[in-house]
Amino acid sequence: MNRKVKAGWRLLLSSLLVLLLLGGMFWLLRPPAQAAETAVPIAPTSVTVAGDLQSELGCAGDWDPGCVATHITDAGNGIWRGVFDVPTGSWNYKMALNDTWDSAFPSGNKPLVISTVPTEMVRFYFDDKTNAVLDSVNDVIAVGAGSFQSELGCPGDWQPDCVRTLLTDPNGDGIYTFVSADIPVGSYETKVALNETWDTSYPGANVAFSVATAGEIVTLAFDTGDNSVAVTIAPPAPSSVTIAGDLQSELGCPGDWQPDCALTNLTAQGNDVWRGVFDVPTGSWSYKAALNGTWDVSYPPSNKSLAVTGSPTETVRFYYDHKTNAVLDSVNDVTAVAVGNFQGALGCASDWQPACLISLMTDTDADGV
Image (cartoon, rainbow, N blue to C red; front, top):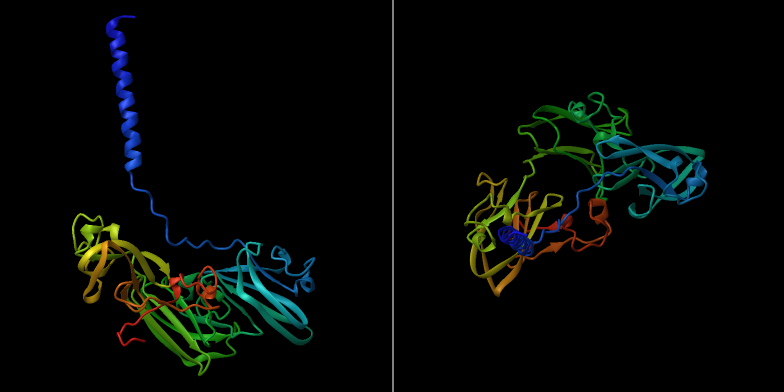
């Protein structure tokens, strides 16, 4: 082979080898991807009333999460509903998702006592947004009926039987709520109708409310203690929450006090709680939580001080609660989570989970409570 040709091939092969080596180095130097802190909830494909009443309702046996005969129907907006003629007796049941026991609610079995002979028509409900399980024997069946229902997918307005706007009481305190950020800008009226009819409704006069900005969070609350109805409006949930301060350049941002630096963004945990963990260098720092990548809305009103004594860095957990606008960190504040057998009903993966921040407690007025 011609010497010049051989030399050309050697040069080409050498160049390719260098490129491959450099590519491998860049791969090794590339920062590892961060694992997501929270999984995006996936709507169930089926919901089954599973318990010792199933064999009475057409199933081959009891406690069968895959029995189609006791499936309930997707009514929209995360609400599932089914109606069955249940025989006289004392029964226990749960709601099993996706035809398995992998996800089932509530954490303990729900008792159901039927005294009517020979059967009683019972309505069963499951709210995938809150994991609440209701039935027409044990629970108040309250629907937010009003001039906004058609905006949420109901066939029309003022429909007490459209359970897309069902209220639930996941923590069992007697206050049933319906929460939506999907009601368009406008003025509306509402009442709470019981048992999917107009036979009983509260209050006597309609309750008026207005949505001024798209995405505002509307909460309709019904207190079974005194039958009072209240509507509250909260600002829209932020699209991002950023720890912005003079520590940002130490955490990878190009500069400090940058509300749009994604490297110091927190991650949504559910129930309007946001969390992030960063290795902060030794020193005295100041920061705020900036919403939506701008300084238009930020908390607290004054900068929050952070003194880090760990050397060379200290792992600091940062929290923001959009319900109360509280800003916390693991250096300055007590990080308290309400733990119990109600957490699954609020959206935690299960009960008794101290790491589930959906039930984070905050002290907005700094009184120690």
